[in-house]
Length: 429
Image (cartoon, rainbow, N blue to C red; front, side, top):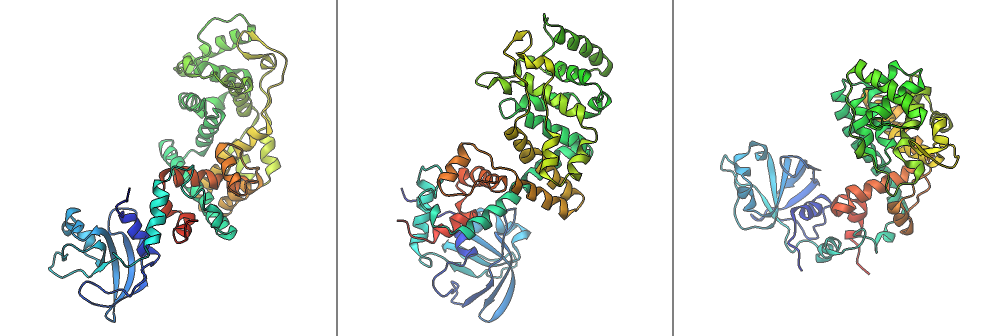
């Protein structure tokens, strides 16, 4: 099936000036491009700050791209003041003359038959194939320097995207970074399967309340297990009975309302990842680290950061995975790989967002340096990239690969991807 040429592809042709014939407007004027402009993904013309010479006269302004020139009117641009600064209309087909609101003609450049057909054939191949990523059979053609360059950019993009999401949370809690860190840590302790449960738990139990009981581990555990809805039934063991009694007192004191206990998931989880174990470890983290946010900001060595997360669940959990159910003895410590995931998903983004917030480039660089020191994750996505020849030793690059897959490949945004841009100009083998 032949794809209709989309505007994004035409923007790609214009942006990289892949026009292989002299540029002549529909009214037979010579066009020389001094600067094609900056791609605009928001409302308004497709390219801004373009510089052209038309018959020797220099023009500065915006470029609009359409499949057909009549789309100018279909999209109501003739009624929009933002388009009055358009100095060139770039189209695939010219089916209608276009004029500004003042009656002046807009120069038009037709792209049809003015670029190599194989470029669109490569694009069509990417869009229609059903491989894991569109360029799976061609990615090896991209040289290592370009791979490293784009992956480095993607790592920063991922941190920037996380920064935008965390800034929304900061707006809600009046720029309280301690509360933000608490929420991010709670979310991470859910480890995907129970992320929603941990997030709900943290939102119903503000950090300011936890802080008041930081010196008493039992009280923190009571608050967490109680708010998790895990203390609403009768137990035989003394430990949950004590937690329940303590929680009921604190619940009344702070007028708390617990979340439903049935939301927690245990199925297909390794017992050491049960929410009961993670909640106890989270309680230990909150108990043993005073001024935790400051410690993270001030720790510039990975071993210092790792030490902050050397946690062990309470002694009760040495012989239990769930309340009232005895199990073989095993100390429930936070493993090395789990600590690394926390450094990747919480600590590095917090350093980056705080650095952005106070305009401290050193902290932003510290976040990137931390990722370069942490061992890369190992999941199905990373394993597949590794098989395609990607370097996966550090989180600096594995985070880039996660961003590449989830924000580019999954949406087939090949025209925005440096690998795609490179490969579109190469022949398929």
